[in-house]
Amino acid sequence: MEGHRPVDLKSSIHSMTNAIRYRGPDGNGIWVDKDHGVALGHRRLAIIDVSEAGHQPMHSSCGRYVISYNGEVYNFRDLRTELLAAGRLFKGHSDTEVILEAIAEWGLVVALNRFIGMFAIALWDRDQRQLSLVRDRLGIKPVYYSGTDSIFLFASELKALMGFPGMNKSLDQDAVASFMRHGYIPAPHTVFKSVAKLEPGQILYLEPNLNFRLERYWSLDSAVHQCQPGDQHASDADSIEALDTLLSDAVGRRMIADVPLGAFLSGGIDSSTVVALMQKHSPSPVRTFTIGFNEHEYDEARHAKKIAQHLGTDHTELYVESRAALDLVPELPRHYDEPFADSSQIPTLLVSRLTRNHVTVALSGDGGDEVFAGYNRYFYGRMLTRRLSRVPRPLRAMMATLLTRVPVAAWQRLFNLVPAHLRPPQAGDKVHKLAGLLSESDADIYRRLISLWEQPAEVVSGAREYRGLLWDESVERKLPDLVARMQYLDTLTYLPDDILTKVDRASMSVSLEARVPLLDHRVVEHAWSLPMSMKLRGGQGKWLLRQVLYRYVPRLLVDRPKMGFGVPIDHWLRSELRDWAEELLSPRLLERDGLLNRDLIHRRWAEHLSGVRNWQYPIWNVLMFQAWRQAWLPTV
Image (cartoon, rainbow, N blue to C red):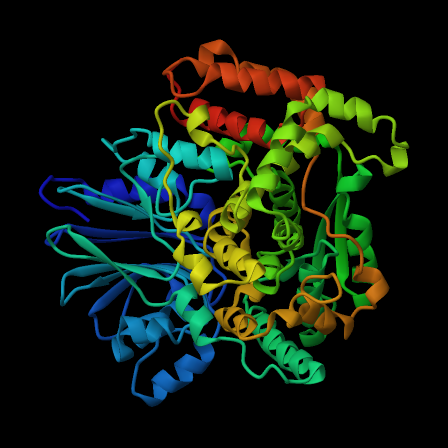
């Protein structure tokens, strides 16, 4: 949206949409209102109503609203029937048209609260001369924006803004420090001072003078406290039936498409449940896709194959040599156009490429760990805090001091006396990490469990990382149960900024739409209404979700230790990726602007190479930042 400075709107919007053409290879639409200095652009991935009637930007039948929209609203057919009865007019059968007519009929906020889906919406109100940007409740679809006193820009990805002439690309070093802790940059911040992310459940209203205000139409906080655990005496059978019914509806709605559809299948609880319910709805075998690795400890394909055989899906698996995964590493900054260091981005890209060869839409099991309490750190955190609560804080601090006085190498030599089958890997490293947790509070323990660099300001010279929700002391008062608190924090931070970012960029890089039924907001709200015993029971997480899955798949096929969707970064950094890493960690690149602490990074790198400490994730963070900088801001 243009303010005082003249801009060639059509040319600019064309360049911006062209930068993300892979998100929508089926069409390119531009609408310009020169009188008011407004331009909307859209790249179309045709999923529902692939005809020209679904083309965007789209106008409402009354002519008041113009929309550019990314995502899907899965209850659009129900809403369309209601809107037809109210006298609204339709030309096609797309969900985009339903969104517009719903907003025209009920107003933006009322309409948003009736949508079931994932969406990033740019809406221009021609009567009020107001632009509204909207992000879905859980943050499945992204929205970036940047504003000055002369122009306001927005897009689904940062690279669309980066190509705009004169955009300020000054690094936000405080955001870089946050990245070093998390492996992603938490919203609303980005790597650039001039750009922000819209947060999940937010609306941005932009006025004609380019001032804007933010408003929430949905918040997890409200959902959590409005959906406090209800009838604690509801039977297990009734609870299982209720969740089965709700999940079945969520999955069934996400199977609506006018193009081929399938699912990612890892063989874990979440994706297996989604696929089982898909097969329940489908009269023919569902297409399922899995990536396998020859490294046994990273390979879930063998488990996925057994699930697929039991459910009778049309299963495709591809075993990937490490070389194919390694070849993706230099491409990562191009797909994740701000620093991003979740190494499972590599297999996610691989499975997305495999899947796109066969279908245009894929359902995913993402979100199950946050919603139904599945992460190992939930159990570890609860166990640790319960045990530590019995020990006075001063004594814990003394124990920590004593443990860390013994060097890691000495601990390792001591553990080498233990039989190999009883000895944990890198035991000395683990002792020092445990010592770091002994004197911490619950909040500090959570931060340590999710931190890659525990003191990011030591890595990024002169930085002060942003202290957001993870430092908010009111969260503990609101949610005294540690596991519930960790779920809450993960859902607001790690889920949208890491997990959903990873899946969105990987899938859209190959023009594949990924749908996440476990993050249907009705499922999320329902899960928060359940007592914790429905999530954690018998030493396992996701208890209730497991019971639903057991209706379709035998326990013996899915009851096994949780595996992450990972790759052997630890080994690769010492072998095939060593030359690539050492170039990015060279003094020439680390010292180019004095941003990073060369001595600290080199010390950690040397310890990692020697095998004394496992610094794979902190080092990977630095490498992903350096690779991003070389790709997008090359100066040397």
